[in-house]
Image 1: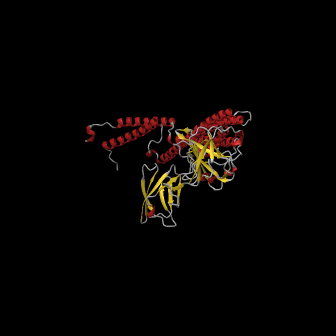
Image 2 (image 1 turned 90 degrees about the vertical axis):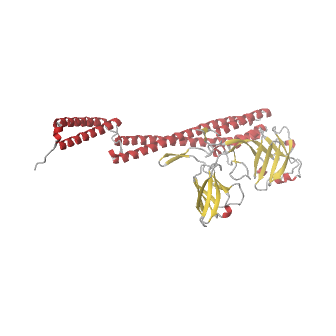
Image 3 (image 1 turned 60 degrees about the horizontal axis):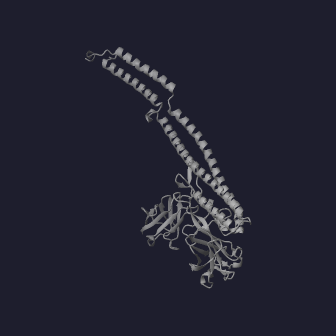
Length: 521
């Protein structure tokens, strides 16, 4: 049977048609305004998921690009610095070539020594180069200078090969120390402090032209020479080192008895690579054992044992030298399992923790000096160099106060040690010393060149990955555009069609609906 169509039904259907057509027109208008096919997740849930994935990828590429730019800055700064260091070494080579000739006077060699001192200062400044306010040769300790000027000491006496030195004080030129001729050759170095020989040694501040008597004493088993403003401690690890007196009639011959040179050098203050060190603070030999730290620690971390009760260890840690402390607690380990204390960057394993250890404070010192930047999903690059590896110099091993700052060993590796020897040779008018330093300089220059080559290799790798990221970014942006961006020609065509449809609905509605109050009665 026929269904009666009322005016109300016609009005409702016409309103729905107009609103539906208008809604489509507004959606197309929004796409035209934003030039995007997907403006909200409801527009296309599957496409929205792909868009989010592409944007995450592009965000990662952007971060990798920022890291690459940072890496390029570090590496370029390192390369430029080492280039300037090489130029300083070439100048030193020229100076030593002049000093190694036999026709120079003492005053002329002393003048060359002033130039060598200037080269030392220049290289110290270069070793403290910063990029973005961070020192590039200090390992992780980028907020502190890598090197500071210091005093070093060495001897050409083979009888003292087992002796290391710790020099303190202030001197602007090389200090010569000679054991007095009254000391018989072969005398153990520790016997110098017995008082059997008076004076046991003499020293000179002007290259051996004038001499003064010094005194020495035995301190903690080591001989300490007091040479005016300079104090030199001779540390004999073997206990078998011997000395011989110098014949003053042949005082310029370096193979004549025991000579010790104290001359300016540089001391490294950054950190190095190796195993993380755990030490009780203040250091108490043998008071705490069985601690090992694991992880990647950016700075020294202090750990304090607050309480051990039942099956729990309560502790606090500080990463700002004790200014603030954070409390934590963990289960007490049962042998053979250690107690694992979690700290920023990793964890600390302690064996046999008992109530007797409460109050003890430990220091975890990081030995991971490399600074790595992520430059890809599975790629990273080391952007810094450890100054001690590049320039050598003196280095105080952590928690090893007894040995004192020690020079780096190895042919060519101790640049600052070589410059120090060159200064000593020039300031003491030693042609032989200049020749020896000149022979060692070639190896040092090759060693520094090796680090420049390493910087060049890193720069090439950065450039290669940068190009890869550019291609990846281009492809990902194209993929995102395909999913998200609207086709302008297609959109305008649809917009025209939709507008025509809306106008048609309005026209037909106006023709069909002749509304009056009587139609609803």
